[in-house]
Image (cartoon, rainbow, N blue to C red; front, top):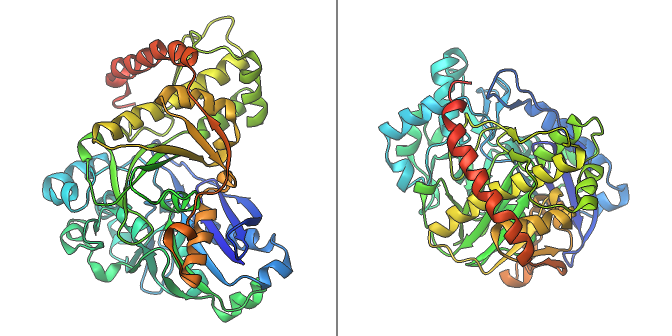
Length: 484
């Protein structure tokens, strides 16, 4: 048995797979999030640890005793800062925090290698500008920093006592030479840091340590190895077998991601497309990211007073009416690909007396799909070739949404067994590979196909003019977003 633990934004999830790689158990514990000021998004690392313990405790005791290794995945970019005694200095600044646009501009001017060696635009979501912000705005805290960790790697520290990370997660800091797969002093220096402040680097399947004896006893496990794992998207890709050139996934979690595996480092920063290491050796990936995806449904469902997302989406499916006059811009936390605009705001446009819950649900489903299409088109402009697209994340449970998404991007969507478990499944598979080895394509074979959603001509015809309106609304409203 192998355990995957995913430190997400909205919850900690676990997945247990058997020795053949089949998921047999899973748990989930919610996480709180704090937004103390406009554009800010923070979490207390202690909450990650508490929820991790609760999620593991929910697994059957006999099952826990059979675990042979643990893999980790987690939300990327979060700046988790510790002092010389490994104490948390302040709440972690998360991936969807938009406070440091000014620091992005400063870093870009000071070090153009972020675009080449780092492979990416300097964006507020990345870790590097967060540290520059801390240096400028919280200097007394900054002076105490000894170590910077990513969210899953703080949990690893609590599990093993080791400071380690994997290359896919490290690539999202902007401090990694992504092509060479190593920390870069040149990229760290503008943030007042050096490699001495960084955890040790591992490939995703490598062993980073073992469970501390007292924790192993508390969890009812042996002192099993803890594998490096991956950033949430790379781990999610490993979970559904997206590891080879041209294979892609569409992730519908808190954020929305289109992830394309590549056999080489192919940066394309001009379209706000990310170029990162994959969680497996000698592999990289391109990625488009929208900051609010399934979280838009959570927001809208609560807005209507129900709060049940499944019921909310069902109302749109029952009506089955595409492309009404109600438009939704899904920028509840700003946006990355292709706009790189932390000031972008969510918008409902076209509200009338006949606007009801079903039309709102349809507009939100379409608006997120259009945001994904914007990102997908940016990937295609980087001369990427996409052979197939698998769907993962909580949003993958709705085939009706898949129908809308498929029409928006003009590609078939493949739904696979266990896809909703996402990164935790990939973390478990990385743990299995780390212990057992074997042929990489066999160990990360794509799970069985459950459904394939093909784009329908009538849906494409209905959504095309609305997509143009969506893009026009963003363009025309952009000046109004500034300074709000």
